[in-house]
Image 1 (cartoon, rainbow, N blue to C red):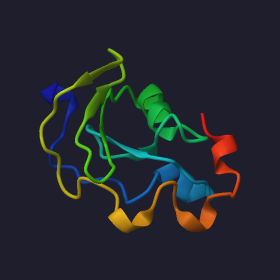
Image 2: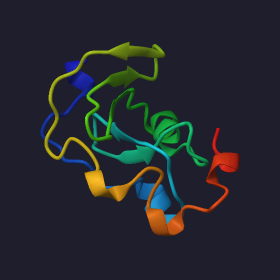
Image 3: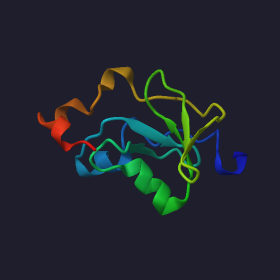
Image 4: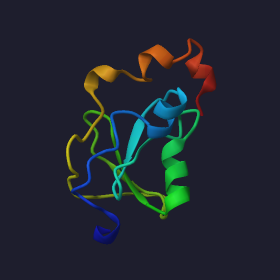
Length: 113
């Protein structure tokens, strides 16, 4: 795993990089352990974290949610253990779920996977 993980790279931001760029929203966030890209989970409408893995081959990610430290290996489709990553290790706790609050539609539950 160590070849595919860079413990020194910080996260790309506090929210999903693509959703932030296109005005979207997310349910939960995932952080690429190779390059720090923050993407939205597979429950989210756009599923950018999985799309990042498919585009780059960066197979390991870690939850980017407060209080969560679990890892996932996309290639093996399995939970794995991983090292501590560069801080911060989660989105801001006051950001809310789903988020960001000002872009979440009122019918968001109907739009998730």
